[in-house]
Image (cartoon, rainbow, N blue to C red):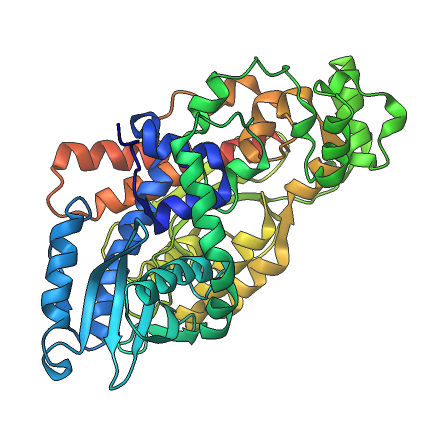
Length: 488
């Protein structure tokens, strides 16, 4: 009986490079994969840029057969390659196979005496995993008889500014990676043979770890974790930036942070986390309250919600530019005064920051600290607003100078075991004010906010759904500034 020999692909080989178990599961138990909304959003954005790139590269012939129709796609590719080069100089999604490895090429450009392979990525540069993507494809194409002499990554030009409606000329940049791809070629046959053995053998026994998220989040992590013994309530892996220290502890058999001897920690922050975890008592440095108490009045508590698009959606914006579409601001004039809330959610489908800035200066006065969580983000948004609102530039830049970041104060002077190594606002807040947790909110995190905002821009969305999403977004953003109030 002939043994089943599944085909490999570029994606499967990359999965195998990350983790043999991920590859095996992708081949034999793909239904166990769970793709998060973030992964789905990135996939949709990558597809959109890929289609735009085809036009920016001058158009060509698209192999219509989809990824489930490999034989049809290969046959269609060969029919196009049989034409004179002048009649089919550029082919998109060309399909090839070599030694039971199948690939689809984003762009195959036929030169007079050779081919150029272009791998399109919706990033602002070529990454190591992209070079491997292109190297695998190059190996297959050369093995199938194509004279690939040049290899490029087509990516987003980080300096591109969208200036005319529908005109994306200049958005696509090409980076030559031929030398890096050629350097990887000698090792690919061995890699392919190894991974073929993996998929034909039993499921690899590999435990979860850092490799589950590098270079990509694995969709099988939930399944793998469910097959493993229960983790301790406070694993040593919760230590932030643990690196080699955590690796050493795991190698010595430590799993529970509470069991690690006190003298094993050189990092003062790790010492505080370990002590609070062992005792079950929060670490609270009096310097935290003293620093906050010293802040003058009035006080402003500010939070922005922002979104970025690989392909700029609005005039005047760049790829992946963080663009604020909403803010929440609580104002408190004295320790005994009741906070007043201001906010704005902009759902007009054009660059929103000028309108957001105009509303913002109406609620923030010229004096008093502006409390935020993670100053760098708010400072970036305020500076961008200053660029699009010259008349408000002085006031907006003045706000940057008044920002007070609560994050480093809490990081240095506070830790509760329930934070589990995180100083995100959502991790800290429940330990200080349990009644203000984000649990149960329809919009409960930044990704939810972005997805809801994109939905609001959809003209076909009905009025009841729009009103519901507006209310959910408004409540979520306001919860962030209520949280800042509680932590001050």
